[in-house]
Image 1 (cartoon, one colour):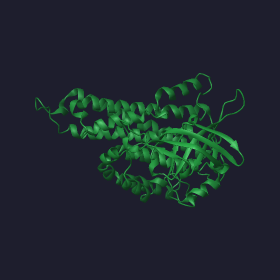
Image 2 (cartoon, helix red, strand yellow; image 1 turned 120 degrees about the horizontal axis):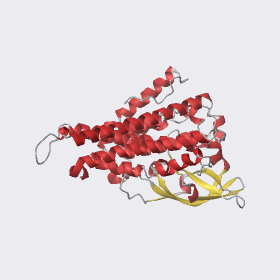
Image 3 (cartoon, rainbow, N blue to C red; image 1 turned 60 degrees about the vertical axis):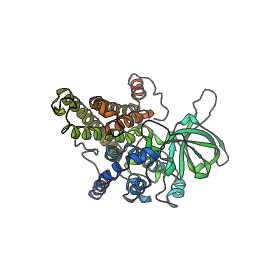
Image 4 (tube, helix red, strand yellow; image 1 turned 90 degrees about the vertical axis):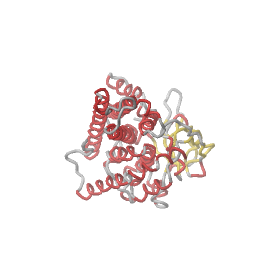
Length: 406
């Protein structure tokens, strides 16, 4: 289904639009290779080195990196478009791509000294992350912060040289803690092999731990400044994609993977059903009305999810091009809608998994992998419907949002 992820009246130049189209074409060209490596990614619990190399060679890792540091500096909607393309081929590869690309996007908010430290040394540097803020404890010291903690779910960390983590700094009695993000070099953290899971096996989303690290001031940024483009890096990175509320819209970055899983499952199942016959009767499976109904509903769920995500991404870009002003209701909607689109995608895969019957449970069946991967993806807190819906419901009913990052 065609849906535009850019506003109709975008201010983008023809040259920029051509670069964007070329990036999408390069992602599509990788699909056969990604499909051929799915089993390897699952078996090794990490993305194959060949895939990481191709993401570098095609420039996909630089899709949202600032242009001043050699990046493509594309729009936020590219997350969903490319994430869906890659996700239809290999969910784990898509998930790792989206997460690692988001760190290049986020680094643009950091002080310029941190950006120089990373990208002057290596424009292709990969940065891992873990943003479960309560897991990190920090305190102010001369010139920076003392940081320690252990964080789960650092996707793709084994391919990374640096680590980006969230932490809390205790304030006075009765005051909420300050939330900050910290950059830590490879000798400052430890990867703990914990990723023994049912879905998204290839993402290698291990735990990371910091016994104690002194983080210089230039390697930190306050979450508060990421809501309204007042972070230090926003003074030098002024493209629209760096002038949006970071954590409020982050769910779209990984929603593309979920959309791709569902769209890929619908395409594969529909194609396979055209020639499949019943084991006992020999009748054409495609003639069965119950299966026709499931295919129709699953396809409609995917189309609805894509349309909703595209509308929002175009709106986010339009607001940013005009000079986005923070609004809690709008931020709550941007937490709600990707989670709702995700629930539609899960419905699509569940329908097909049920329709597949006994054949769908074999390891050789793509539908069982789609089922495992999409349910693993929905465990991410930003895609959990109850959590996202509660944020919106509170704001809509005149109560304060209960998520301090947005």
